[in-house]
Image (cartoon, rainbow, N blue to C red; front, side, top):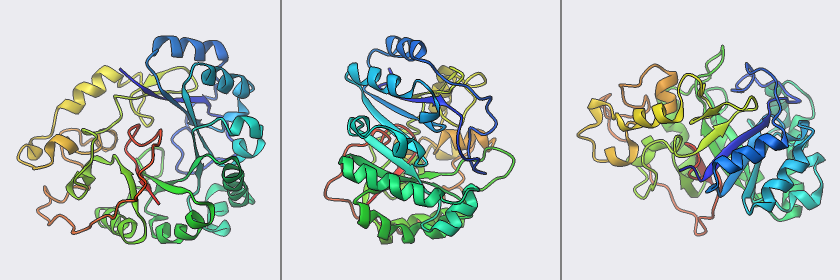
Length: 323
């Protein structure tokens, strides 16, 4: 049963980013009665993250957050900065987690990528507000072929705001494909290990180098995403009408044949299922696995953060959290 739910209150946004998975979606908002029904359907839920669009663009945002909190459920929020900067400080202080999206560690490149001047400045202001509120904060970075070399540059921002860096490996959605190549992926992992401490990892293929991973395959499927049109999906990048939770979880159990003799099969289960589906590789191992390519497993060792922390996203989707 799902204990973590991602809810897109809206897919309206003040930006139009090239890599956004929600750009093709029809614009919708979820209202309080729909949220009430979701919580009734999943009475065991402990964590809810609000994302997809900019949540404050839903007129019911404040009402919905307060309602969820009355149910004793932890609330997280992912924002480009707008929602955090415009919501009441009293409400912000009640959140468990906040992720602020940044693609580059400087204003010029980030604003250019997101197509609006001042976007980086608003994200930094949001980090300042979160620090003032004293809440668990991370920078959320979609790691792509166009920005992976930025990784070490985030060190200064993390130190300044005492926050974490949460990495989502880009999934091939939309017209343009910003996926990392095999070499870029492992170069990125090496940069992470050389520049940051590891707090949490649920990217399945990294079971090859992260010995104490606790997830079993893709975390997606054990958590639920609900898009602003009310459609449930096991993975935020999936169309829930084409692949529902039951089908997704059946597919998770079908480990690709080349993986059967692998020592981390039980943890990796073939790698990120969402990525394999989107790349039409459902019966093949994760594209970033060196073993089917007859390559050596990269010799990369992470140093763990002394304080591992608890994050809503830690076992919620394939992600890497660094400090």
